[in-house]
Length: 156
Image (cartoon, rainbow, N blue to C red; front, side, top):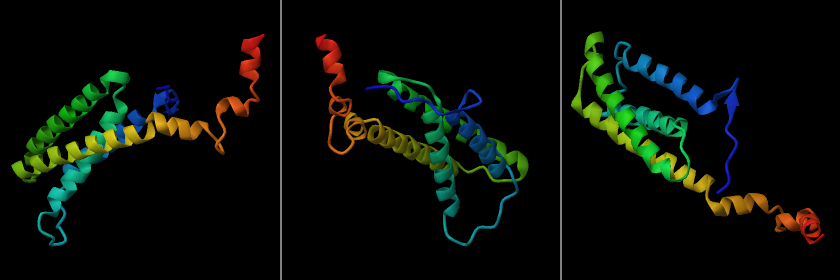
């Protein structure tokens, strides 16, 4: 599998920038005074799951790894998100919010969903068949597009 160029802004990977911004917003949002919900039961659990799915996805994207290390990086991303969920729930008691074990379960479930989404997207984007689709424009192969110049150079 060939490498894909990494997006960067001023030499910093885009994944790291997005992760930092997201994490700051997540911390701020979970440590502000609680906003009354719309009356939908357990909506806060859904919010926790979605928030931590985003965090775990961005963590998995931001941690550099290649080849066989992808599984390890996904495990690391999940563990970091789960540990942060625990710290987040614990520190909410300091700002007049409730610490709830079920919120932590929602955090971990969301982190698993984020890792699963990262895994599926990575497999879909970086599968060998997607490289073949991208490299063949209009059904012709790369050698046909360059007019067989590579074959002519190798034959000479």
